[in-house]
Image (cartoon, rainbow, N blue to C red):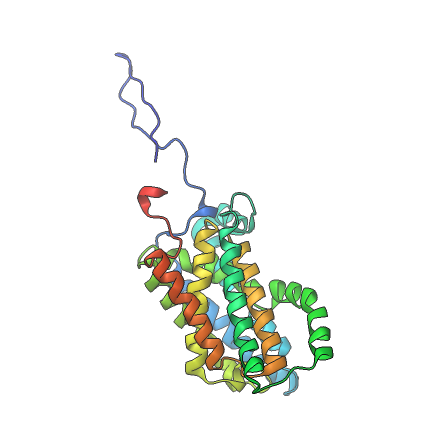
Length: 291
């Protein structure tokens, strides 16, 4: 950090040196953990209440409305806690994390492509081995819906969580824990946050084993953490990555089944391990001397 030059004259008292400019809070990736506990309480309270209450009003049936409303818990919590602790300026900085300006170049999207290819490969493997078959017409129809699915997921089906998980929680965890530990902890929190969906008929979670899903969440959180850090605190890159992962995982589940199965979990964890080894556990987080 560069310090401003200070000039003194005999007739003036010494003036303390001060930073030439303050760091842009919308680009920080490691901050003081203040507010993290309140964020988690509000997130879980909002989401779990929605996931418990809305199905009772709807008397069963399609769980989608409840899932979508509850998914806004992290975003709502991030906005409320930021408003209380940092005021309007803090909320503005939080939303500026969606800015595209100088957000890490191609690196975040290269990481996104890597994890998408890994999940797609986990779908192609059983087809290649002949254990499942995919009809060409079904595949073509599914691919035609990808752009719309991506947009919906980015807005309300997972991407909307990123302002909370990456935009608010991860910088605070990385402010008190090493990057790898911070992302593992966040991944575990993310998995537990989904817990009520395992008891809700019709959800993806109700069809998979929680331990496998938890491993998947931890692996994906490590990948998304690297995306966020590489994007210099940019949430938009994490939104794109989250939506892309959900789209390709949804296609895999529809075409070959076995969501959160052995191949998928193994592929995601392999990518996570590669990123950890390649960055020596930093996951794109700059050291203080490099900031």
